[in-house]
Image 1 (cartoon, rainbow, N blue to C red):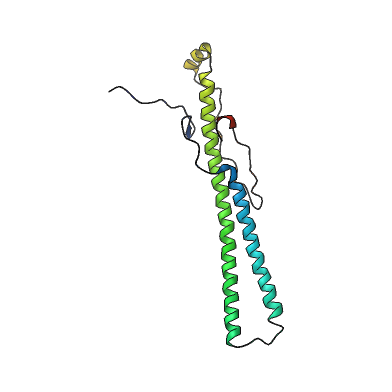
Image 2: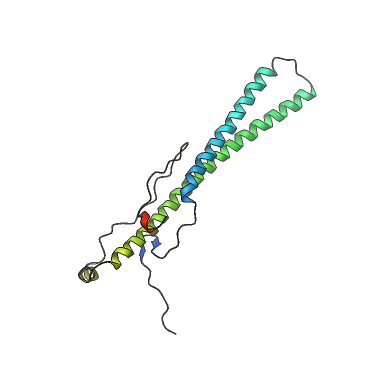
Length: 166
């Protein structure tokens, strides 16, 4: 059997023949911001419950087993609301971290495709020179962008080499 291997152009951690990153890069930051807004709404509902509980129940003589059950449920809601808001904020941060990693990887794939395209368009003179000196006119592959921050989770940079992928 003959050699069936394919030579891949690899730049950094990505090759020109790599498939696009399977991550919703275009919508992830909107989802992170929405999760963060939901955390704010949950926190606000907890604050509203605290206000209602302290102003309305303290005005009346509400004592006994029903008051104890009510206070237990209010406290359980406070704890649940705090835990949910904390979890939603952490989730939003994880989405933003995933966006930065996915954007960086897709940019490296796009960069590899760009380099391969440029190399395939080189003339014979440039190819001859680069066979001796090496391919050196592309620079390093892109790094991951900074992780976007709350509450807006705005993209920290534009896509690199967007004509070669998403």
